[in-house]
Amino acid sequence: MDTINVPRHVAIIMDGNGRWAKKRKLPRSFGHKAGASRVQEIIETSGNMGIEVLSLYAFSTENWKRPEKEVENIMGLLRHYLKNNSNDLRDNGIRLNILGKIEDLPLDLQEELKIALSKTENNDKMILNIALNYGGQDEILRACQKTMEDFLQQGKDPSSLEAEDFEKNLDTQGQPMVDLLIRPSGEFRLSNFLLYQCAYAEFWFSDILWPDFSKEEYLKALEDFSKRQRRFGGI
Ligand code: FPP
Image (cartoon, rainbow, N blue to C red; front, side, top):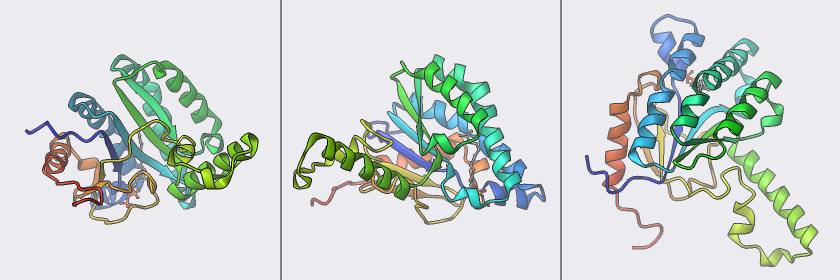
């Protein structure tokens, strides 16, 4: 495979868990469990490919609308994932970062997140962003709020605003913009994921449901990306 043109930042919308379970006449929770078990291989492959940032959309600001039991199930899977895999992340040079409002998550998950964040904070091989209670519009509004506070505090004129004044207040501060956005499961939507950071992202869609999204499928997406001509508005 041509690995010359590797994306710096890959973002994945892990969609299709519910349909995967339905196809097998299983409860939705089985789909989420199968989806969670796909994650580690994709993280490892990303690290091995030299990707700098991998962003995984695990729970959106809109996902609270789901039945309470399903929300509890997803939170439990995340807790379980962190408990079982944070040492692996630490030992493989991966730094965990959370996108979204951590303070509204269940306290036991917040505790597990704190442990995993501190275990991995000195790593620099790859950043793993997990989007949790995350919405792109919410992130932009929070960043606007912080930027306005900065400007008021520093007595700066709004007309002097530069991109970096704003970008340093995003949850992805210091990270490259998204190069490749992957969405399996046959949907063609961004669903409020990394709206600002996807300005010039290449998109890759597939019919495969997330629990079936293998390393081979991921490599196909990366190979396809490596052939794209990106012009960033130029010619
Ligand atoms: C979307 O599928 C999936 C989610 C909202 C949950 C994603 C969560 C995980 C894969 C679990 C754990 C994550 C990590 C990082 C360990 P859907 O339920 O909307 O599927 P459907 O559209 O087929 O109903």
